[in-house]
Image (spheres, rainbow, N blue to C red):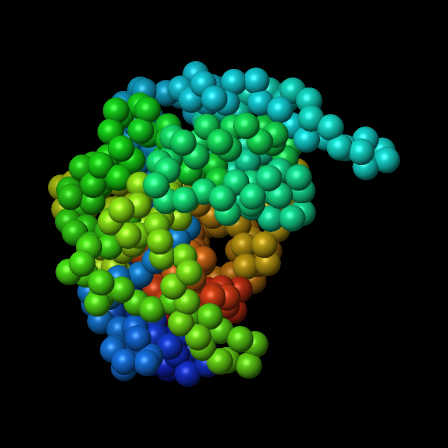
Length: 384
């Protein structure tokens, strides 16, 4: 894979000049480590370089872990994907939906159907993130701004269930807190805290010793600094979002709460590339990974799922799924899947090519629409 070094290394070096102060990339092909490089700084002010054991806030790459964990319980027959969520989380019984008449007057009325567990996986539940576009987003924003990290995921689930949904479950796609509710479901089904379940069932078996919801004192100096970037490239450290990682926090976000290293997450990605198994540890069956990496959205939901960098993709059980490479001018494989994190971390999993890629950085805004498609095109362009 000489071409990887020749093409990818200059690109990553260019990015740490113009974008994040540091980044890392690990690529595994056919079980062999073919690229592993670190560039720039984890701490620009103190000139601490990115290392193999640097810790990153992986934000929404947590979602892939959460969905795998939930599917492990699915494989044990503890629920079915079409089961109503209210059978396990009674706070979601009789959900309400905000509706608008022809004059724009808002009211709330019963949903046309219950939220199914599948709707949580596929972001078709009607739950949203906080924002200002709809009343559901506004109320969710107020709730999340007022929440502190002493509350656990079950408390959040009950509070979110009181907010009317943005649409009838199953009718649209909307990115939101659905995978946090999956974390609450895992707690109820397993009888353990979400973090305990992940540690026992995924992290310890795979040897992911640095992946967790909390930062311990002995690892603080390994945590990469987060940087805000202005339009002209000026970087400023940002620690505003770090309260949830502290030892006293009880909040374990299935949607975005994990810290990890590039090595740890690469082991997780390799397991999925290999059909759910790595080094004798099986997380999921090959058939369940195939189900996860299958588009589950209908025509209307695919219209809603319209982020520019996701053109050519559908959405499976918590992951983007490559459907039509020509549509997005994409040289990847049909069936490639993965996701990204708020600060620019990214995972690509391609069972067909037996290829996994993990990229890490810590930058807001992340420049994701620029960086990730270029990573993909260069990596696939170097495959023999």
